[in-house]
Image (cartoon, rainbow over all chains, first blue to last red; front, side, top):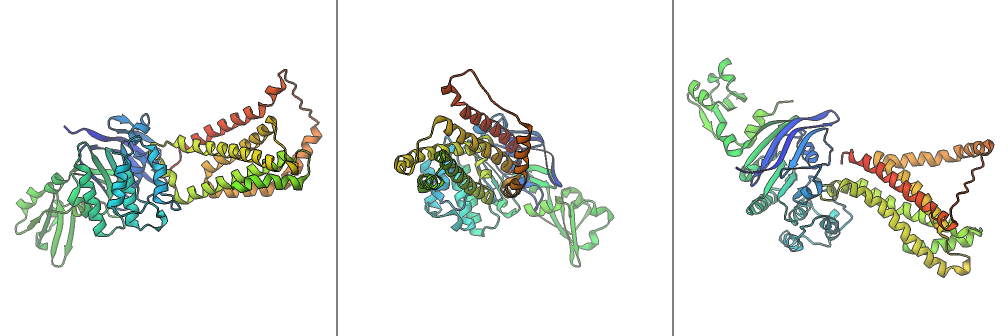
Length: 285
Length: 197
């Protein structure tokens, strides 16, 4: 059985008018877990709370079986973090920024750092303020991967990046996972990135966890159904999580595939995308 | 800053012409240098929020706060060393070496100033702290004379005659400065531990 690298139990955090409501989920070792949700659903709040950037109001957070509050330094030595806005001192060069971050880690590996710098064509003497968004992300990943972290936590790492860099990042994650005992947890609203790499998916909406399961099982258990509007009535509507009707027909997401097949003929059944499933569960505001 | 820390005491002392001009020159120089450098760092921190990234590393929140106080102390020590260099160069301008007691009093004043500034800035942030201190500086000329008048009217004669050798009495300002610094640090740590980064 896979060990849990992160266990969150009944996490509560209030931030103005928004709150995380008794969040409970866990991450398995050896998996890439995608943390999905629409803008404002609580992804960043959750990640910042589990990292201790937002003090929690209640609940427990354990990394590698150890309580975060009591073993903070030991745990953070094993975590690589990439935040959505970087939070770099932009007047500094890459080298200067590294010289601040590196001494914090007991396992800092300069050769790995230089390897990534060369791989990403970054210049150590370049000021961070002059880097493009993609280059900043690459630098953030370089810092996160240069101390042999066991868990990589990333908050919207692909937001604002072009498809080429996003694809490159996904490949980096797959390379990272080749070593045993590694795990990745990253939040995104760009679900197409997760189609390629995610093993597990956690959906958060309005501060609550909606589902936490294997991507393959999730997509197996749901179906995208298309058919004629004549098939839609008061009874059949209840079979769908989300239903969209146009003059040309209907399209809906269901988690009751067998019942739909029994009750509706002449329909097209397709495998849904992660985005289709996510939108089916997210409440319209 | 390095050159300023050497030249300023010589210049100030030559202009002041007071009996304790050396102490005042040192105090004003170290206050100026400390405040400018601390302000530069606070501004950068407020602009880029780098402490958030630092706190995802094994640097703890406590470490970030302690670093601020250690920074102030290190700058004080550096200014003191540079002052001694200035005193060696500017002896002909009347700049003299400071006694342990004078250095202690200077450290105490620095400790009071930053002992207030750092917790206030930790609590309210860089921008709001600027306004708080601006208002304080603005109101001081109006409030201070009233306080001084009151103090003179109550006719208190505070005279401590502790039965301890003078060599130990000279270190009392240091001890109070360190104590105040520690209290301020504990308060700042408490405030920062509950702050959303």
